[in-house]
Amino acid sequence: MSSSFGTVFKATTFGESHCAGVGVVVDGCPPRLPLTEADVQRQLDRRRPGQSRLSTDRNETDTVRILSGTENGLTLGTPIALLVPNRDQRPADYASMQQAPRPSHADYTYQMKYGIRAASGGGRSSARETLARVAAGTVAEKLLRERFGVEIVAWVGAVGDVDAPEVDVLTVDRAGVDRFDVRCPHAESAGRMMAEIARVKAASDSVGGVVACVCRNAPAGWGEPVFGKTEALLAQAMLSIPATKGFEIGSGFAGARMRGSTHNDPFVGKAGRLGTLTNRSGGVQGGITNGEPIVFRVAFKPPATIGQAQATVDFDGAPVTFEARGRHDPCVVPRAVPIVESMAALVLADLALIQSTRK
Ligand SMILES: Cc1cc2nc3c(=O)[nH]c(=O)nc-3n(C[C@H](O)[C@H](O)[C@H](O)COP(=O)(O)O)c2cc1C
Image (cartoon, rainbow, N blue to C red; front, top):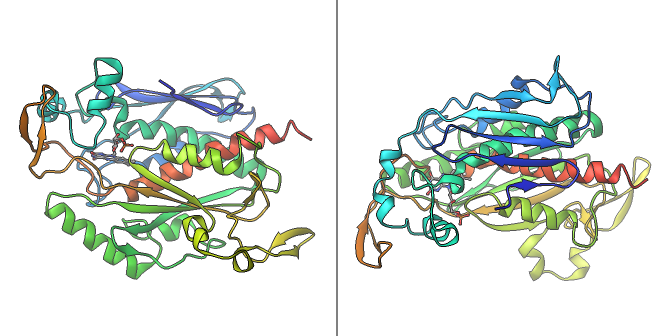
C-alpha cells in the first residue's frame, strides 16, 4: 500500500479508524523552522469530526503530539513524527458491515485486495486517515509561508445543486471561509448550503459538493515536467483524498467549450515580472508555475454510508437489506477544506525544495 507522498518533503501516514491512533512521519523538512503542537492543532481542529451539526457525531478531540524532530519549538531537520490517539471508537456500530460490503464504500475492494480488512469503521479507507495528511500539511504550510511567502486557502464552492458565485481568489482568507460552518465565504450561498445539508441529514441521506482552492505567491518556476507537472501532482494529491471524483485546474472542463481567442491569458508587465491579464491557465503552464495564483477545484461524491435501507448482497452474494448504523457525515466538503489545503501544501513544499536544488 502506498502510504507515502512526496520525494524530498515526504509524508508517510499510518493508522486505522479504530486502532490506537493515527499519525504521520514527515521526512525532509528543513531545520530551524518554528513548529509547535499548537501550529498543527489549529488546522486539525478545522478537520475534526463533531465540530458542527453539519458533520458526523463522532466526537474526537484529535489532540496531536509531536514525538520527534523538534526541540525548543524549532525543527531539527530530522524526521518529525506526529501522533493523534483515537478515543471515540465504537466498533460495534459496524457489526452489520462484517457480513455485507457497504455499497460504494471500500469494504469489498479492500477484502479482495488483502483477503482481510479492518471491518470496524473502514480501517485505512476511513476519513480518519486524513487527519495525518492535515498534520503533515501544516508542517508543509509553515515551510511555504515562512520561507516562500505562499498562502493557501480553500473553501466550499458547491453543495449538491447549490453553487456559490465566484470568489475573489486574491483576497479570500480562512477567517472569511470559517464565518459559516459550511465553509463557504458567500453568506447567502452558505445559508442555502447549510439548509440543504440539514435536509439530507434529516432524510438519512447524503450529498456531494465541490471544494475550491487558491495557492498565492508561488513564484514562477515550480513543477517538474513531464511526469511531475504541478497540475499532475495536484490531481494525484487531490484524488487520493477519500470520496473525490473530479479535479480541474484553471478553466478546467469549461475550457473545453471555449475558443483559443477567448481562452488565452495575455501576458502583461506586473511589478517587475511578466504576469497574465486573465488566469484561465490556473497558475500553471507546461506543468510549471507561472507566478499567478494556482486555482483548482475538487469534486466530492455524496458519502456512501447512509441510514436508509439499501437493497444489496452480502459477501456470499445473498440478497440483504443494508441499513448503516454508526455516525457518518451527511456531506464531507466542510471538513474536506483543510484536507485539500494540506494536500496542496504537501505538493508545493516538495516542488519548492526540488526547485531550490535546480538553480
Ligand atoms: C472528511 C471526510 C469525511 C468522510 N466521512 C464519511 C462518512 O461519514 N461516511 C462514509 O461512508 N464515507 C465518508 N467519507 C468517504 C469515505 O472515506 C470514502 O468514500 C471511502 O473510503 C471509499 O473511497 P472512495 O470514495 O474514494 O472510493 C469521508 C471522506 C472525507 C474526506
